[in-house]
Image (cartoon, rainbow, N blue to C red; front, side):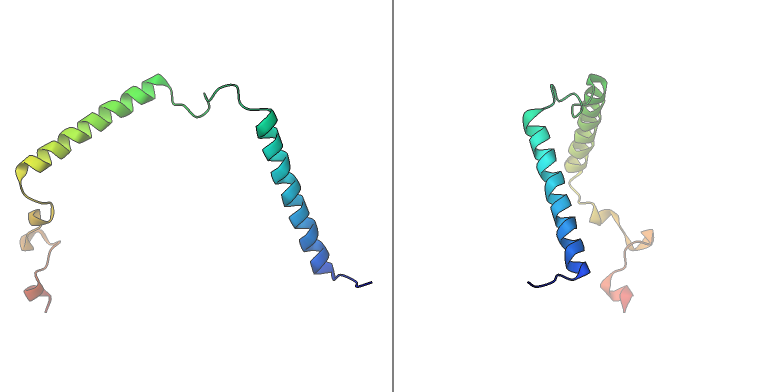
Length: 89
């Protein structure tokens, strides 16, 4: 009979423990599901706040699109963030 090294035994025990833990978690979730998803659903006030933020951001996007210029065109050589290819050389 082949004798396993100590490292092999440790790896086998660790893999077995992980498998038992995963099986236990899966069975617990299957046979004892949460009654409701209140843990994952935000409160009404947070949803309302996020809706107002989203609508405000949509308003900013609409205003940006009506200006007719893209964001990069605002960066001029004087702003310090943009260097034309001629200035880089």
